[in-house]
Image 1 (cartoon, rainbow, N blue to C red):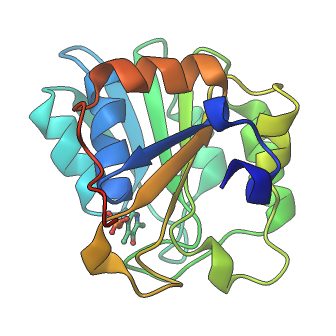
Image 2: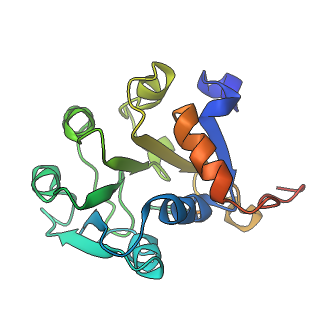
Amino acid sequence: MAEKLGVQPSNLILGNGSNEIIEFVGHAYMAPGVDVVVSQYCFAVYPLVTKLFSATLVSVPAKKLGHDLAAMLAAITPRTRVVFVANPNNPTGTAVSSAELLRFVEQVPANVLLVMDEAYLEFLDGAADLVAQIRSGAKPNLLLMRTFSKIYGLAGLRVGYGIAHPDLIAAFEKVRQPFNINSIA
Ligand SMILES: *Cc1c(COP(=O)(O)O)cnc(C)c1O
């Protein structure tokens, strides 16, 4: 996978579906008093994991059913530790432009983890290549999440993965179960 993506193995972590990667984010980042910024109509698991870790969900009103990235940036405060963006989004099927997305990635403060959920990335033509930001090491606060569940139709196998700076991956390795991926997957 590292070879295919043009990254190092230390840039990757596997999960029992990318749902488990979302849980790693909870373990590593969320606690009471922490704000988690999402868009209205976001993927259902972000609010569930936020609640599981007793963090506070900040839901930003949607723009034409999709992410209002400017409003999400404005919702970031000193209490914010995580921002989730799914592009394309589930359940609304909305997507922002590559240019808009790249601008957003540049603007999220370095002390806030930006989780870019790319579960449906392969269905887009001309998607922004955020792996370049991981390859260059420029964004230690960026986590990309992908999955074999959607484009490959292998949801029952439960394999998802995260792509990020090695320091971030190392933190997630500390909070995952030792035997999270089974040998068949
Ligand atoms: C399906 C989906 C996932 C994760 O699915 P897994 O089967 O756990 O990999 C994550 N995010 C979004 C937006 C999804 O639609």
